[in-house]
Length: 250
Image (cartoon, rainbow, N blue to C red; front, side):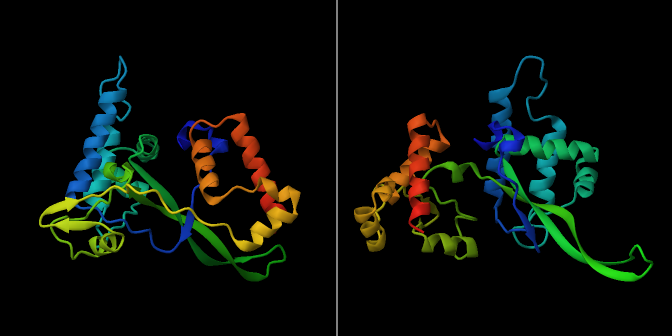
């Protein structure tokens, strides 16, 4: 998991311009996130902790994000400022910053940094007026992690009894189906079709000895999965050989 890495080794957080990303949640999904937070506290509570890793203030911040700010724009967005969260959760702004990071460590939410660009007019060193663009950070765009989304093959529905909702129509196109009021969550039992190698890469593999280290799509996917879990030295060596071979085929 990425949060076990040192902070300087983690990938940089995504930064976007414009509105926050949309992610719709119904009341059932919000209840699952809230239940997951309490289960995380129960499983990770240590002696001497009154509540657990997620303090009362952190849970108040989560409750405010879920039931006060998420969907307040009429859609599935959640982008309040720290000041508004602090006023609703009745805590300090610094507590909100710590709570948001604790909730991300518990894998209950994630966020992107929202940016905006403004034109500012100021004097230069010679006293002449000039204008320049300045990028400012506005607020975060939060996205909650539904516990059902972590299960492979599951397609979480929004208001499962109503398949005509926009989110459900998209999931129906992806293969999910609804039987009355019962959501049928089918897991993919068949293995994904193996992708054939492109002819030009096959020719390069045949006539170029260095291209022999190229991995197929299935081999590369399995290697990436091992690198994300418990990689060995052989896995890293295979990754470097594949990377060098791919660079040589460009």
